Length: 214
Ligand SMILES: Nc1nc2c(ncn2[C@@H]2O[C@H](COP(=O)(O)OP(=O)(O)OP(=O)(O)O)[C@@H](O)[C@H]2O)c(=O)[nH]1
Ligand SMILES: [Mg+2]
Image (cartoon, rainbow, N blue to C red; front, top):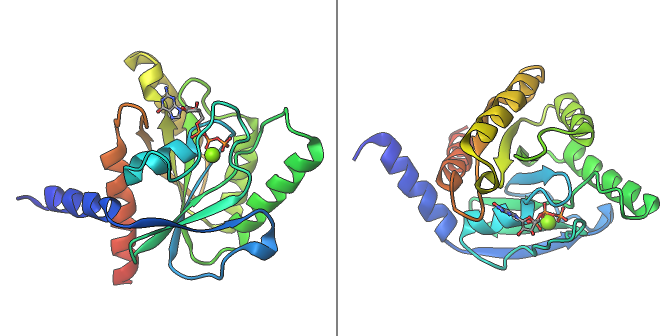
């Protein structure tokens, strides 16, 4: 068995192990105390954050998914074994919710991202059909400023032809190269078909392994 295969197996095992909801925070004061390494899923409303958390952990209903944007209304924390905490954030950039509510969420998300020492990586989701949009740029600037390293992941790749996927990847990569805290890499995933899920598991596992060794 080569090294990559062994790491892939360990990554799969990590995500097949126990994963439980531990806390939900709709306001800053409700955030759980800092503890294990956190990996947060961020992105516009409806981009597929909750679906990706479910696909990674192989559970259908761990995080709530909806066709209606604005489904996740609090920051949800899920423990993944004893290794880390997966964090499913509410989406941003959804115009149809009340302005005050939008601002409150954005404030909550931004303050979490800026001030959480145990946040080891943000996974920035991009809908393959839409690419990076204006509201993503504000988040990327914030992550750069706060020095939170982030990995861009295209979602819903089952919904486009391979050429469109390649174009979306190239466009995202060009933009990411301008950002200090961005990984110079874009993963392609589908929560529906399972494409790219193992690769993302491996990315998260490697990060935790490196972190534990540090
Ligand atoms: N075709 C396709 N649809 C997907 C995929 N992942 C998610 N969806 C759909 O996209 C919609 C939104 O998914 P969610 O996972 O709730 O998105 P979210 O980013 O958590 O949304 P908010 O919590 O509202 O910010 C749902 O209708 C999902 O079924 C995918 O890989 N392929
Ligand atoms: Mg959600």
